[in-house]
Length: 560
Image 1 (cartoon, rainbow, N blue to C red):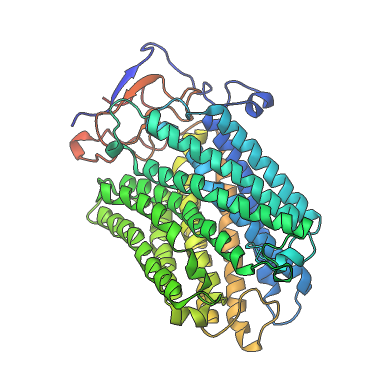
Image 2: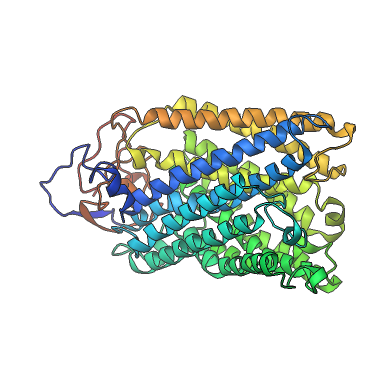
């Protein structure tokens, strides 16, 4: 196979370091009115990182309260609001948009060899809708908060006080941002691939983004309708979910989880997308089982719509329904297992370099595997009866969501940071922060598996004294985890004070985004990229020399 054929548009034109999307055009107005996918991705990035900070502070306060069996720093009412807001902020404002809207918006068109997404103005609109939803959510927090948990379960949510209607309306608005992003990605992948890039030559990141977009477009309207019905019931006292009004509270659970279990894959499949890029790049080896990984993403997207009932084994559904949902729960784990085994096979006998992004990828493999395997316990009806609504569920959910999605997000952020901002961060600090996060995360959530198996209910303000040592260990772990995350923030932000020093391809990657300068020019490429090899062709004779961290960027036109 031939190498990348990159045809310069202006062979004699040279770009200086300041000729990039960050500085050209200049001014705040140029950012607020931009239709450049890279700028929109950066604006999303800062917004979701702010949401991550808010949700993380809520989590630390919850863990401090649980240091002792009795009152520590807050009242029971405040505690209920705190963990509810932690969940709502993390799910709706951070995890769901974190990878698709921020990193995906930046990287996807570049990886396809496109100039932008298919609908640039719709892309900007989706960002402003996200901002409006975030403002509504913050207003709800300030104006009374919620104490329902992030799931808004009825009949409690239809009768309790607080700003439940405003918070659910915020989630309703945020859903439109998610849908518009999904529509844009589907159209972009179908229509804007570079010449020569077939479906089987796309980076696996694009396959996973496509699967995520399908879930966003098909599942999110169900959540929107459900939340709108809840608002109508609270406002007009219509008997939809409230049994006092002739409604059925279990109907809310069916509607909510029909969206929210596919939404779990809106959160985790993008994380898998990043891992599929990190492992071959830092193993310097072609991905093992390309088609199996690609189709497994589509399989997860489709099967994810069939397993919502495993959240309701104790809700009174029929034994036949529970049996079918239990079987499907085990079945949907197969595509995820396919990915994990293929990633491990890719690493086998590879030339692995342990830079910071790869350390996050290895952490993901360990933590996500624990999360996936513990999910099988909850998929068994007899075991779930004991573990339902205990800290075992809390630990499982966080191993999948944070041990999976957030760890992958951090890996992708470090991977594309030089391309996004043109600066290299301190590699040693990056490795230390990753180690702190890994240790702190396990110290926080491993004890919670034990707590749950011993019968500690989740969401309880007070608990038996026999659980205090494990709760204290978990809280100490959260402090280590928080320290690691703040170290990541400090390391990345400190790099922005340096002059541009990132080469075009600091990691030796083989996808198109590494063919443009760091940071890229406004229209991405100063040449017409035409794909002549796959994205994971790491045969030694085809590899370009890998630049050092401080080496100059290669000339325009890519390697040929």
